[in-house]
Structure formats: C-alpha cells, structure tokens
Image 1 (cartoon, rainbow, N blue to C red):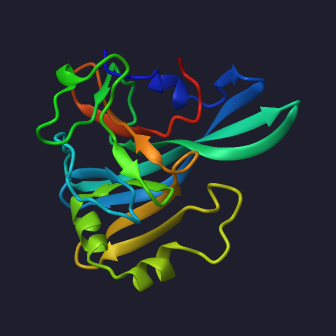
Image 2: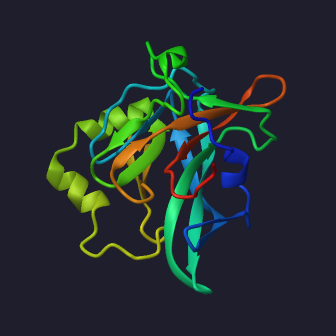
Length: 212
C-alpha cells in the first residue's frame, strides 16, 4: 500500500514518539495566512520552484499555514528543533481521511509497498502556495531570490528562520519558505477530507518524526 502516515499524530500538540534514544515532541506553530488567488495548490522547494499544482484545488481565498515543529530531546535535554510538517488549513475541522496529494497523471495504484509521490528538495526548503505565486517566483532571478529569502545568518530556531514575502503584487499571492525537516530529499503531501468529503487541508510530511 502507498505510504500514508498517521498525520493526525503529526499535527497533535504534545504528541511524543521515541526512536533510537531520542524523544520527539510535536509543537504546532502558526505561521500566518497564505493567499491563494486561484486555489490551485503547489507543494515544492520554493528556491528551486516547480509550478504544477495538485489535482485537488480549493476555493480562492487566504488560509492559515501551520508548522509542526519536532522538539528533539536526548538524555533529558532539548538538542534541536526541526520542522516536521507544513499544514495548510483549509477548514479547521476533524479530518476523516488522508490521501496522497497527486499531480496530473499520477496514480497511487502503481506504487509499491510504502511508496509515495513527493516533490524533490534541493535547497533545504519547502512551501505550500498558490500556482500564481510559484509561477511568479520562478521568474525571479537568483539575486532577487537571495535578497528576499536567503539570509546571511540562518537562525537556529526553525520558526524564526521562516521567511514570508508577497511575490505577485497584482494578486497579493505570497510564499512562506520553511526548512524541510532534515534538508534535501523527497517529501509527500497529503490531502485531508472531512466526513462529508470537503477538503480540510494539505500536509507535507518532512519525515522527521518516526510514525511507523
């Protein structure tokens, strides 16, 4: 079966998991509002953007963005913090089912055990944003991207390191650049639906917290 972790745990404040002598504690944090002029959601590394949206879209509007921070504790002391998941909240309601967010042409029936579709990260960052925002960002030159999103000194706290900016003035579409867990890799995004089938949100799992 395709890999679908227990995302409800990943989004639950205070959830604890232990693996290899390290305790992982979930700390959800509010980041701000994401403006979606079209409602076509893209998950990607914003510093190496690709603008193909997921098949599932939402009504245009602005939505809360949250990060699930993993607080790592070793030998009784906090050792570091990593962003474990990025959560675009469409409806702050219970999720009845999580399924993999797919691009056009992708089919989960072709995946092997624990397989998944995800986006590649080459610059250690991730985002969930509107297609308009990512297309606008893809037209920026490197100097503008660096000036806006790449600080000379990156804070050690992953929430302090988050940078947000409006990238399309005409629509106010914006992008939040967050650290992608441990860094580069391939990360899946999932769609949560309410009991009556409405989209409640999108979550990218950066695979920091062991959920198996």
